[in-house]
Image 1 (cartoon, rainbow, N blue to C red):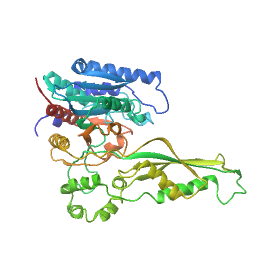
Image 2: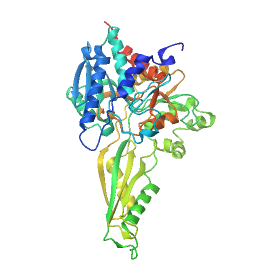
Image 3: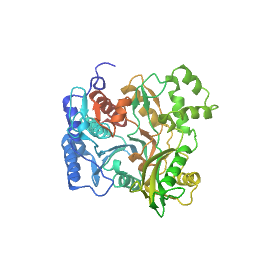
Image 4: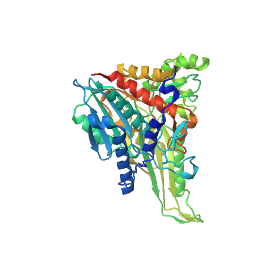
Amino acid sequence: MTSTPAATGVDDRTAERLAAALRCATVSSDTGPASCAAEAEFDKLAAHLEQCFPLVHAELELTRFGHSRLYRWAGAETGTAAILLAHLDVVPVDDEQRWTHPPFAGAVDDEFVWGRGAIDDKSRVLAILEAVEAALAAGRRPDRTIFLAFGHDEEALGCEGAARMAAHLRSLRVRADLLIDEGGVVTDGIAPGVRRPTAFLMLGEKGWATVRLAVTDPGGHSSMPGRQTAVGRIARAVARLQDRPMPLRMPPVTADMLTRIRPALSTLPRAALGLLPQANAAVTRLMAARPQTEALVRTTTAPTVIRGGVKANVLPQSAEALVNFRILPGDSVAGVLEHCRRVVRDSGIDLELVGMSSEPSDITGPGPAFEIVADIARAVVPGAVVTTGIVPGATDSRYYDGLAATRCNFAPVILDAADLKRIHGTDERLSRTNYARLIDFNRRLMDHYTRRT
């Protein structure tokens, strides 16, 4: 590849458009209605998008759902080609003093655009709009309709944004060839034994549930404890859940991922995967040895909160713990709760689901639309091996199950282990080169689904 934008990075004006979006502190909250200050930041971001992309806002139909934005780019023919998802909100910042640049300063230097949302997920919003604006300027129009759905509360479960937009599309009886959202990236030096950049085109996502364990006790003075205090009982229950996780299992999507990635592996792992499916059990146990790969073959168990007691010499009258599960396709929320009851084996401990739960999403097959995305990924990241997978976390696309024949959670940005830690962490940033790849990917996608008029 010679001097293409994806090879040299975006120019200053393009970088500044993203940086200005990062200066809008659109922090979503799952603790109640947004503050007036947060509302103003979403309004500021909306005004920025409308100013920067005039053709999009002149020619596409826009429907607002709160601060979420659903664009309809009408096609000349009936039917829907694609639904492109991204989200406008970001997570809060823990410690601003640890950042190289203030998290909402939108700093730009020769190499990076810095700020909360640079990777997750404003760069995808802006890259999609850059691509559509360029297609409109070139006189291109889609044969079939394209939707752009930008949620405003993805980081707070998406109930007011993605859920409402998806319901609206269902009311229109939309059925697209392709749905694209965040979740998969191109990793470099992360997948064990893989010698090439690896593009993970995720075909679905795990479910999730949080189980609360709670116990009450008469309490009293610590000098005369019973055989177990409330804290002790909760601690034992949590230890049992952690020591007896849900069973290992190789779902079809993970087997497909391994088969596709096998040619890029070094000799020994390539030989081991050559024994699939006969050696499923052995390969599954091997994957369970590392947290990053265990998540692909098990519903994971993560004790995250434990509370109880008020003073060192007072027996606690109550104690509780929260345990988070990320649910593998084939398991269920009800199955997780039943597993907890079976493992804890203490009738005095109450177990209940708290917060919002989500079943594992549908896993779409890698059909023709998958191959389109895979070919574009290879063009944007030459030499990359393309594989499938499942998103371990939750994205807005779970609300869109059944609205597209093929789902791909993917963005063609190349990230190493240090980059991945910046997502929801300190010093989130995106290189100019990665941003150019992201725009190039979306432009190629628009070229596929549109034509000159």
